[in-house]
Image (cartoon, rainbow, N blue to C red; front, side, top):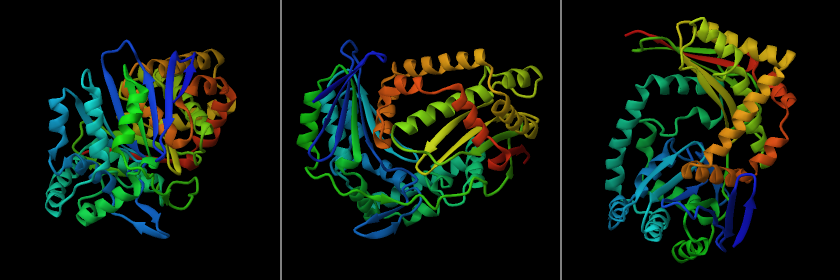
Length: 423
């Protein structure tokens, strides 16, 4: 077991890689009653095309999410009952890049850990249960498609990208999930749910050695081969479509602007790029930015305006949006302000303000066990140690943020998604 101290974050982490390739990360919190376990696999909604045994395979959209739903059913019943009996709160999620299963408990941590390890590593599907789940997930998909917040985002992704699977919803479509069978689920579990493609992060008053012992006793001894994934051909900076409008029952127009950013790097360079991108968002349209303040005072925007910088396999983008009666004006103002900041620079005092705020926010996020686990798991899969963010943050300069704005927030990289009121 390797112990690493992070004085600037005030944490000590314990790491151990099992012979089967599973990475185990334990964040010691000896004075907390609550404990948290997060078991994640590097397999998400974008992993639709992959190579196994020398052959490229195409799988139905939504299969990673479908598999997550089905994993809770074991031959001897639903594991949620077992967690509840042990006083644990459990859940799971599927994103574009990972699927994760987790629980929180104040007692019986190791019993709950054994349940978690056992059900995630032991698939059990029947044709009947898979068919039943199709109706449940299809209803979820239909409800999502009627949600204006989802439609404005999914329309934007389709405008920005031609080849990347980021344009495909993680849950798939009602049509695509009809092609999912119990055998398809078994095949995908066998390909991706292997210890060497997973990470276990535990946070709380727990014993790192005991966690490793439990994992070794329950999980397969073999790690599985590396699976190559295909995220589509590299795309030009230009979006596929500059604008898309959809009519829905909303009280005020909604918009989401997107800017297609450069393809993300790997390792610590990726962590650095994420910090730069987040600072660029704060400088451009954060709620303390000059642009936000002016548009708010003029009554053009309300408190709903916001956005973020996302980095995904083979794709990265900035999105910003909200409710406004003048969506195209706000879109144009954001793009022009980015150009101005890129040319003339960000005010030094304001830059230092958002820099302190961003750094403080990253430190405060370590108060959340969930944030710690997600950040450590995503960092591991992407090749960096998230707890090194203070050292990486030190290398970022105002010039880096200004260069990011010049390169990425440009009219030729932009697309606009609109939801307009109507029946």
